[in-house]
Image (cartoon, rainbow, N blue to C red; front, top):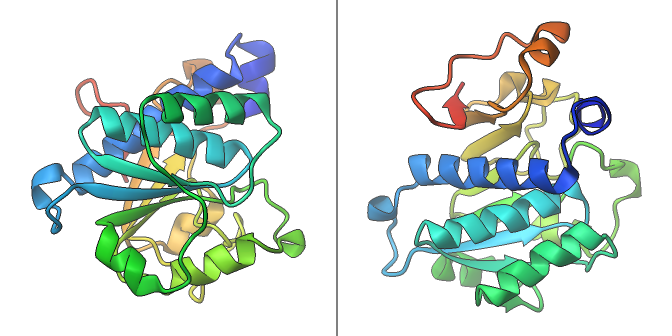
Amino acid sequence: METELLRDYGFRRQQLTEMLGHACAAAIAKVFPLASLQKRQPTVLVACGPDQNGCVGLACARHLRVFEYIPTVFIPKRSSDALHQDLTLQCERMDLPFLSYLPTEVQLINDAYNLVVDAVLGPETDLASVGEPFTGVLQTLRGLKVPIVSLDVPSGWDADESSSDRISPALLVSLMTPKRCTLSFSGSHFLAGRFLPFDLQRKYELNLPKFPGTDDVVQL
């Protein structure tokens, strides 16, 4: 579907990434409003992989800062993708701090952050080829007690199959359409994709729920 948006509808990848990142930040603000956070500072750790999901995570981090959260970004592996580099620079220019490594002692993360945004791996990831540093990151995420917010699919999940022994997010934000793996997901689930052209929605029989007011996310 993303290919059709880019090829046939005149969308640009940066445009899609920006809209989706904003929507993800809006969903986080709905489920975890500033006033509900337990720690003195509204700290959020945003873990961003090198591919498209990581780009959405970087845009999300920047919008969270605009929404008055205090995000810290962790990039396990720097990307050669120009858009990823641009989004990283935008976060740097907004004075978002970056972690040089992810602590393996999960209690350090539990103590420092109110929640963690998982934008490490996306539905396009070949899970059979995933190695370090990502396997170590996933192991750390699985051990966290603070809530995890996964973007599109929880990292390490097969997009077509549900999983009970991997990351268990409290909030999942599906991008454009929910993936098959979300059918058994029991946490809070939001959809970002209000911008999809109506004829494309009809073509794929998406039957999207009604988005409230002017919101660009809807709870499923």
